Length: 143
Image (cartoon, rainbow, N blue to C red; front, top):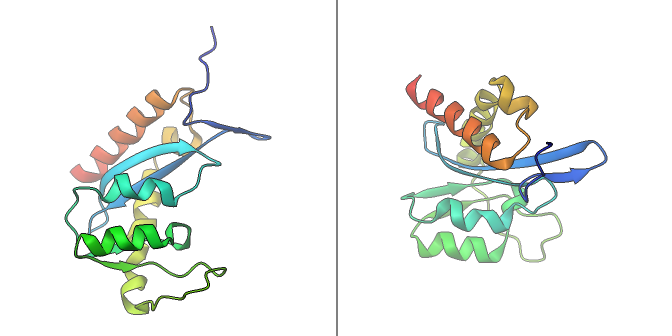
């Protein structure tokens, strides 16, 4: 019997797609992550990722640019380092030197994708795929 796709597996012409949203600590190790269907937006997932995680600075890419998220980060007493969405009317300043450190997040994703089962998403259910991503994250912490 073929397993049914779960809500975390979005369907498109190429098949199933899953997006990993991840919070990474300063040295590039994953702290918290969640899965969504590939077509889901990024910004709505950010609240769950930063909730309860102590941080002085929260960095994210343009997809996470929203006033609601910036306010949530400010309420935590942290600084938001998020580039402005090009369509944004009100522009926020961006500390480019600080934003240059965001490469640690991309490096973490790259290290995760060195695990073949994470990269190719062999798992058919979101629960199993989340387990594989969790094991890969644990290995990153051990290294």
